[in-house]
Image (cartoon, rainbow, N blue to C red; front, side, top):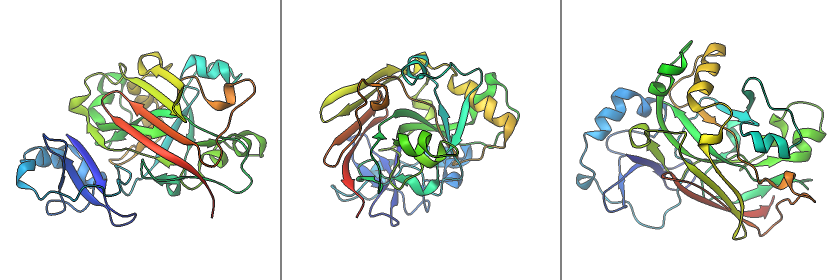
Length: 281
């Protein structure tokens, strides 16, 4: 299934894509695409609904983040060897973890807002993993059974805030609009192998990133297992799993986003998102 949240910010309605690629209104069946809707039991009920029996949503409406009321927004850094090398950082022995503020979450086509004082805002296409079953102390073999679905994430990063200000990476990762999620959530049954997906990011029509999740240092299963040793993961938690090479920081000289630029991130089978860069009003 492909699930989405359609409508104005703060007033999104849950939706499911029908066989013709049209969005059908799930508002009569559930209140949102959130942790409660992403449990195994809830997804099973949604799967039993014939989308053709649901009302069509009007075309052209805004698409919101594909998960609402996100509990934790967990991000893995330097998870592709060649990205770590372009960043001039050592290959990690364990998954590098940082958190992105939930207030950064936005829709996949919302504007990307340059924060005041930014001179080094960068792009990062990443595979997003959405938890659907509470898990703690799970092993790698059972980890993927806890996934509700997958989506596209752009882990937008302000590099000076991230590395030039004293503190953690979270500073450069959490600005408003720095967490576009979607366009839709593809349930795990449609993605038999999350380690075989092509990723790409274009900036102003030029391909800057290209890669495959098969080259991750730590697989999705390893990431979930590792995190579950540290904390309980709950339905609706989102994990961003790292980016392949080609970010602006790694270019010589570095290339960063400016007002008017257009960023397009896509992952095989999961759709594409598009942001226009604007100044903070």
